Length: 71
Image (cartoon, rainbow, N blue to C red):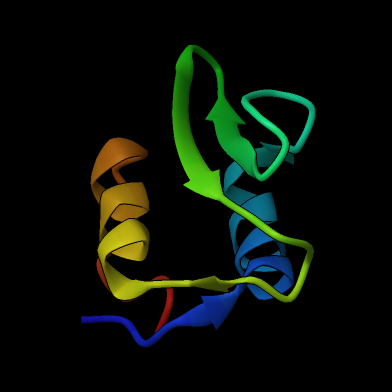
């Protein structure tokens, strides 16, 4: 199970996989990771928001990423 990571680090890790983060979608404190026709919403309060393990696992499943991508 991956450890919590800051949003800015998650964005940096996912960039080579073609996954972008858009803070313009959703509400005031949310954004989405987007690739092609798939998206994954997350709650955010700035770039230092901690993304918890359940959300990181959700990203791995949704975008079919390697299981060790966040280790």
